[in-house]
Image 1 (spheres, rainbow, N blue to C red):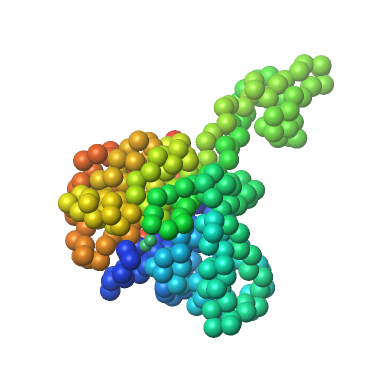
Image 2 (tube, rainbow, N blue to C red):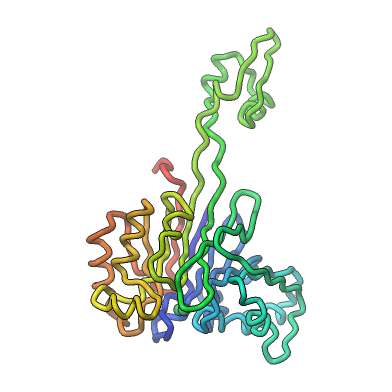
Length: 310
Ligand SMILES: [Zn+2]
Ligand SMILES: [Zn+2]
């Protein structure tokens, strides 16, 4: 089950020639999820081939560099004769402002746009095999982060063991795998736990949006496979980060370490670091052992299952 992250825009508040404002596309089982939509997001979607069939848009906060791409994106979706509804999730207290963006210049999308507000601890979206949870962040406006958390998967079915116990191949295998108890023709009873292993954890992605470091980022998901964190500044500008409600790369790495994350993506770098990301990487790697990177626009990442065989 592929779970792919495409970094559409990785800039801080001001874009650079290399970096577009914030937006991240996640594709899971053919479903497109968009997190933030800075100016020019629609063009990044074209460039990097994510397609426009996005069902949900999750907005972390209403600063321009995270939402100014919404009017243009919706207009193009309408030009493409979109009919499917689009759900937009936005922090508490921002619905009206967001609606203003959706209807900018008296635009009325030709498809239903449903806006709902989310706060700390809410499940913003419940899908078949995963959910998107909102968590509180600490920025200078109403803001949330989002975590994609997959459900546990069924344990591994031990076919050999089932055959040893005399279970005939066929429907009984799947019933056992589903957790049922079966009775064989000779009256032997075989329970699911005799042939099915422990449930296996799904995958988790946490995206903070703009924020000072917060404990909620660690608490929202246990050992995320990927933490995408604000790293607007390097540690030499920690004062500035605190003042402007952002984080340094070192702070992001400390949280990644506390959360037990596997990978850390440092996002939203200030334009002052254009072309040199070395300090961010070096200071993060001092405190975090996992894979650390500064994604470029267009970078893609496939998230494997934890402990998946190589
Ligand atoms: Zn921002
Ligand atoms: Zn912001």
